[in-house]
Length: 359
Image (cartoon, rainbow, N blue to C red; front, side, top):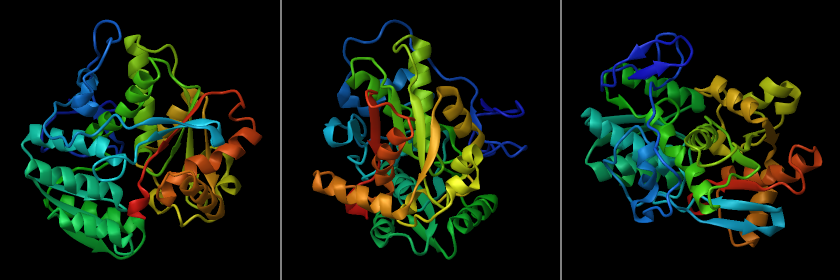
């Protein structure tokens, strides 16, 4: 069953179920599985993120070996980087694509529809192709050409939409309403967040079943931040870790609704069109993102274009090639420490989410 966390309505877990509640709120799985017993002495990493299948509400239906990205020291930043750009399609979105397309197979879906600024669309199109399913991807007409070409090469139908990111979503929602296909949304489908939750599980396992003090992630629709929260919460509930880290969401100045909600419009103002992957003015799960930040004692901050580009240049010189959107996490670290939001002696993990080859 799917359940609305706002009004409590439940819907059957079928291909014909709505992609959001009648009240407009996002849906989640009514129940999520939990493992029994102690932490495993070892995990089968050859299964990729499906090594954590006992935590997942879907069964493996498609895989490209995704998961177990490196966790590497970043001494110049006094942090550890999780290299989540090292995935089959070059972004962390493969975590959610693997689980949402597997869920589509369970439901007997034969055509998927998604809207994306690039990475999520490429991931859904790629995993749909692997699973033998048709896909239509709605994307901004001015999205990075490399991302648009990559989507087309999967055989998916690429629909270029003029206008801002909101116009892309509106066009996609119209297509879904017209029956074009099942909405495999990275922002709305609960199975996608089941996949992104595995980043927390990998981090804990790679650290000997301990959680860091702080995790800093970029936030557009917040699929990584919310997945990280749910993953650590699931591990804590299972007794595999003692505490959930503080979560800090980093948004693009000028398009930073979580920052505005917590600190007012002035804190969210500015410009950062370099971070094109997080230009989301109305996150689908805004209330859940704010709750995750609040419940972990975290925060949300905005970084501007110059900060982002300087951080990306610095990462390049350190041998780490990422796209600009992914550089907002490292870009925020100095400010977080100056403001006392992250202590100088705290253990910080920053997932790096998109490959520089896609820029």
